Length: 469
Image 1: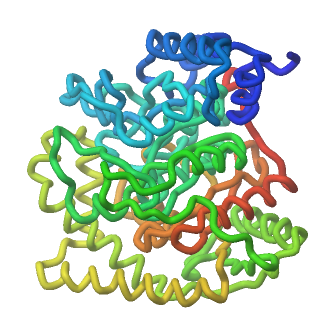
Image 2 (image 1 turned 135 degrees about the vertical axis):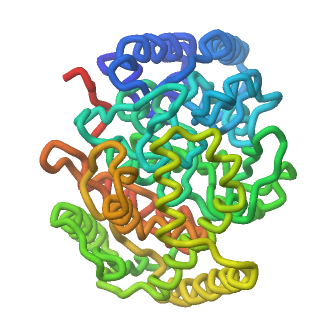
């Protein structure tokens, strides 16, 4: 075939493997070779799962030759962020002290992807414990490089997976989103990324069996990165659904009823009215035109309870951080400690009464957004209100920290609310990708995917690219 295997989408690879046009072993070898060639330039992959990937590919080919039915992602390689368990592999979370923490079993999404025929091929980089800042830099593996411009951050905390997908190391990445951890790297690297609703995908990312604090129960969700919206849709169909391994999951169908008419879209190019870079505003406007061209009624809106939700989110998270700070600070490098200390100074922890009140603020904000989204089921806005910034900007000082917190504010609020969002590219401006996010009601990821697909159909895809020029 004219297109090289590492350039193909996940759905195209699965179709080719299922049809017998290509062997799963060929697909895995092509991606292992691509990792060997390209990863030294970007440092996205931190550990290979090569032997087990080859074994899984051979089993896929055996099953196809025997006439057995294959899963919807048969033979598709995927990377796994270093805070999601893969049986027999260390879950280091980027921390040198955790390099011997070998996972005894797969996390539920890894298990589900395997059951669908996908093949984990490598582990990917992340900031220490996901708490070092927005840039993907770990004490164990160093910096991951933005493949479009090495002077800029690839974003984080899922920057390893975003870079791997963008450069053809794998067609899919399994990572997670907490305050934009999937969506920001998706924008900065020119790929698509999805944050599912709270309770949508089962997960179990406990560290050494310890249950998380409240904010870590409510806010982070596992989710995919890919080069096309169709690939996100395929992964969503595999990962959605109730699972006894995670009592938070709900039995809502992966794809809801089709709308009777084009869904109304509320556009928030400058959430909260705090300013937005002209290139980012232009990206939102381009996406709005694409949705209008697809037949959607599109209107500018003011988002409900925005400032209150943004403030409450930060205070709840910083209060939880403060409770474990004495232990965490012993594991963090200097810039990570500085980032967290400045963050707690910016939004000081609250007392018990204040903490309980914040949980009520969350419910009130969720109630207001649910009412708002009956009128505007979809919200279109920026992922990050600036183009990609330099690595580690948020750790340099209070002004730089505030700049980053402010730029990711729509990601913070949607994380607080627990609602789904899909990040999708809109084009390349000044040599770097731009993109937007489409936000939907709880458990209607399908509406987000539909709209993101319409944007992609009109504005195109940007990857894979070669970081070596």
